[in-house]
Image 1 (tube, rainbow, N blue to C red):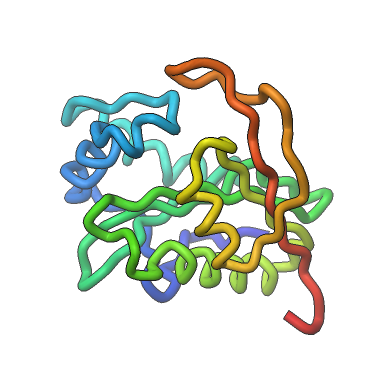
Image 2: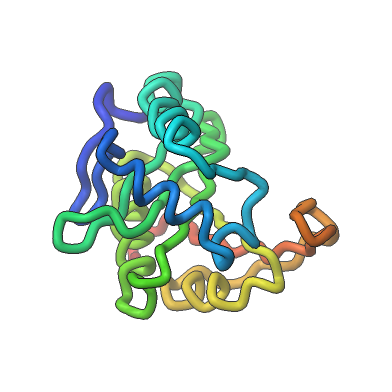
Length: 174
């Protein structure tokens, strides 16, 4: 289902080596760090994080794009849990604090959603901690209804978290 080369889609582009400062800024930002297990504090760790994506794309395991504004990377949106047999996939996303509140995250979700549905995916899900209220608002703004709560799913730095599950289903009237 995935193309041989990772495409650029609207304001989404594959990551570049020059995006190291954005990756470090994101993964050392307390508001982003709170919701991730992954820690990236150094240039080497950021370079390794960026370097993994071409292989993960070509293997069909996962994908990640830089969300851009005025040509600069300001966030991330990615595909996880790619299940081509069942035509389902999960989204992940984060935005740098300076890029929040501008509608960039819902726009990135809509762009990636159209692309996934055009490829034949039938279900796109996203999950976030029930304590991550901004992420819930993004999901709702992007048109992803809440399907339910998964209890004690994630282990984050501050303990166990329940998770909200949102999803969209491909339909002819989207």
